[in-house]
Amino acid sequence: MMIAVACDGAMVTGHFGHCESFSFFTAENGVITKEESIPNPGHKPGFLPNLVADFGAEVIIAGGMGAHAAGIFGERGVKVVTGAEGPARAAAESYLAGKLQDKGAICAHHHHDHEE
Image (cartoon, rainbow, N blue to C red; front, side, top):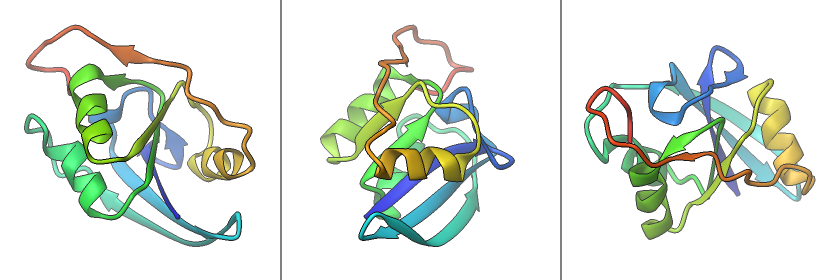
C-alpha cells in the first residue's frame, strides 16, 4: 500500500494544494518500508491530484483539501483523509494502525489562488 501525505517540511500541511512537497510511504503488512518525497511542482487545476494518483498512492492525507481535488481523488480511487496534523510519518503510521480517520475538512469555495 502507498500512502501520500501533503507536507510542509516533515509536517502534514494545513491544505493539500499549498504544500511544499508530497511524502510517499510504502507499507507492507502495516509497516512502512520505504519513504520518498517529491516537491510540489505547482498549481494547475486538477494537476496535483492526478500527479499523486499517478505516483501510485492509494490514500492521501492532508490537513484540508478543496472539493475539486477531493472529487478527482474519488474518481481515481484514492481515499482522502483530511483533518490530519503533526509529523507526516506519524500520520501515515496512525492511518496504518487504523487510528487516523477522515474529519471531512473539505473546502467548498472556489478561488483562483486556492487549490481545488
